[in-house]
Amino acid sequence: MKLITRLLILLVLAGSTGLGAQVPEDGRLMDRIIAVVEEDVIMQSELLRRMDEIGQQLAARDGQAPPREVLIRPVLDRLILERLQLQEARRIGIRIDDITLNNAMENIARENRMTLAEFRDRLVADGVDFPAFREQIRDELAINQLRRRQVDSRIQVSEQEIDDLIASESGAIDRDVEYRLLHLLISLPEGATPDRIQAAREQARKIREEAADGADFTALALRESAGQHALDGGDLGWRNAAQVPTLFARHVVLMREGEVSEVIRSPSGFHIIKLAERRGGTRAQIRQTRVRHILITPTEVLSSDEALERLSSLRSRIEDGADFAELARAHSDDRGSALRGGDLGWTDPGDLVPQFEDIMNRQPPGRVSEPFRSPFGWHILEVLERRDHDGSRELMRAQAREIIRDRKRDDELELWLRRLRDESFVELRLDRLALGGPTTPIEPPAR
Image (cartoon, rainbow, N blue to C red; front, side, top):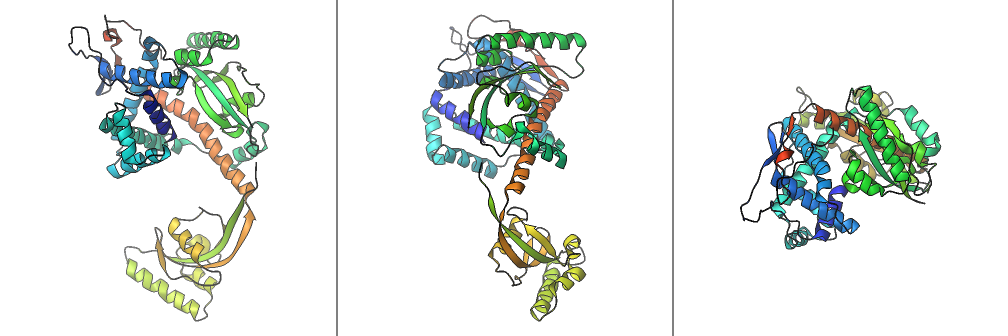
């Protein structure tokens, strides 16, 4: 959602976004198919409209918009990938309903310190088609959900990886150091020939020399990069030392501000990074709860009412002096904890489902709760004790796990998007593109 918010702020700052297609001097509105993407098409008006929007965003941020010819390749690439991802999302049944969309819109408005009505009025006043904008946000949400399913599900993090990250100097997640990186990627297709690899390596080497000699890295990234942040001038934003992609971590920790890295090879291609800026932890006290429970799960032969009645009977027996642990071992359907007398051990906030945690947090120690329901069935619980615990180590490991996932996500996303593009039918018709005048032939984007 942060990306959406940033896009929104730039749109508002940019003012009117020029949402119409180019109109020749004779007044006739012309439109053409620029690309066929599987069963869909991208029209010239759509490409020109997106180029206008992005050009004004870049002008609002940098003070000057790049030449329109420079935007054709990255903007068309982005449109093609968006279209392919939306088709894939529809294929696997991803749908963003109006309730989810409305919640997202309210969050965006809130992040911009406005009500939704104020936000809508602001966009309309600046010339933005609000219904079209809502659908653009719906598409963004669908793409994000698709990526979580198709990319995040492939990412595995081992305990050894967590240990290595915590121990490594370049992944010192307990240090308050942040880096702002610029990134440029010369991509390679899967199964590239040695000649193609050598040509890409040579191209990257020449670009790296330009950057090291003082050329504008943002302009180089916009012109040459095939990375996901090309239209941001390669700007990856501020990241702490542990959030830097694994591929770059060892380089960044040793770089000086303004320094350009050597060419870095990965399965996606050849990377160059520049350390734009560097700026520069606390102990975490968390409330832990030791709790035990008994679970009765409804089944095809045991209705929910019967499960509740059985659990209520067990609670009455405990109130009359029966041993909680013995009854848990004999009756609880949570067989893992049943072997320990229902004991779940010390739990951290967020470890348990909300319905269970809510009752647990309100329950005084030493008293058995009334029966309550969670997605697993009917429970009773007893809080054994609570403590304030120095959770720095656990928090560090949780942060390390998420950081490793984020690092792997960047690489996995690049590979998945490239595979999606390579395996799809895309026909470019850029020879028909007219930038507000005579037809301008443009070479297809390099793949």
